[in-house]
Image (cartoon, rainbow, N blue to C red; front, side, top):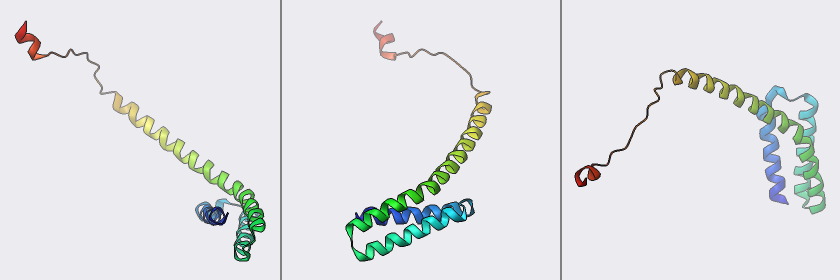
Length: 110
């Protein structure tokens, strides 16, 4: 339970940092409050409270994580389109040819 909570705190803090100004003040505040509450729960060492605060942080961080993934997907799609354009240009010089493999041993025996 503690490891999951620590990992969630780390991931949420990283998401907030990576999104920067793209997260609204309300989203950022909700996640920061949830992080603070979970850190306090970890200090108290109450398993039920840690689980409840972990779930609260998960829900708060979900909106920010979704924005981050959407942004990364959009960046990846743009990069993919650029790569496709480059590949099409490179394909113009391709020559399609057929070949037959010749085995030298077969020639000497035949």
